[in-house]
Length: 368
Image 1: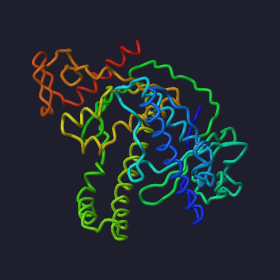
Image 2 (image 1 turned 45 degrees about the horizontal axis):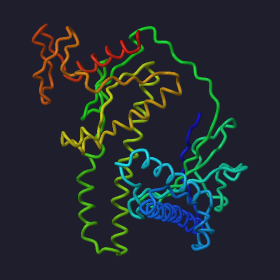
Image 3 (image 1 turned 90 degrees about the vertical axis):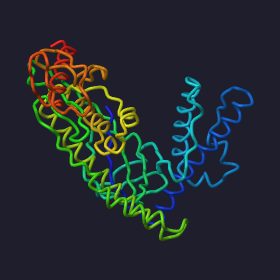
Image 4 (image 1 turned 30 degrees about the horizontal axis):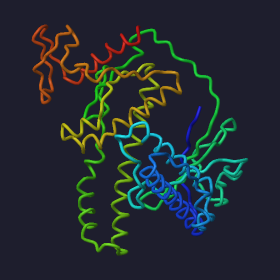
């Protein structure tokens, strides 16, 4: 199995220069190779198999950085380019922008070239030697380091994500009763409403910081382009975004851990959040609660524990179906927050009703 550890880095001035140079070089080689691939394809309608080594003679500064960072950029490009040949309607891969692309590069561990030093305060990285690191978690002895990704954030902080490989025997949980299952209905305001009649009570961090964010963004828009003051203000805005993202991630990690610890099967709807944000004009709310990230956290935590996250069909009318008699109320509107069943007279919260239906469908999929 694979797992990643993320740690904060504290590089010195020389290391910062080399990290930035490597990130830039990886982006350059990706764009240069892509440009040549596109030109070659337009002339011959065939693939071009180029490598970073072919460019080092013309661009000698590429020799100064980690060669594996360039090789990984080549692998990423090759994957994207092969996808173009599978589905040509999507078009060529996009060029990486200095200002919009993620600022990172990946390198591989070769004979201990990546390792946490014995003092647990430094990490050895190719070309960079020892960099100060904050190790808040221990990498176990049976976990083998495969690669790492060094990232620079918009707030000028540096992080390393270390990918490790390890062996673990997972015992799959046998579900013996409905008490071990829970159904979750997506809630724009609360994150979810459960079949246990509980809600996540999501704090809506983005909405809370919106006024402050608007104020700082207004200041940013007034600064002179290219000035030092504009860069300082950009970092202030990025710091607010970073804090919101960290708050959200922390909440979702804790909420997903709580659910996985308590239940053996978690049943959800297979929702397309991108489409929902487009057609229902709910972009800010969808962005705020991070449902997609929450599902990702749930899934990997459940997999490690031998538990299940089950997705039911997104077209199943969970909100319109009565959880008591099964009658479908076709005239239910999005603004109706209470479900009144015309058939059996059930009066119940709309989201609670949906979560009960989701759980019931999940039990049939489990063949319980």
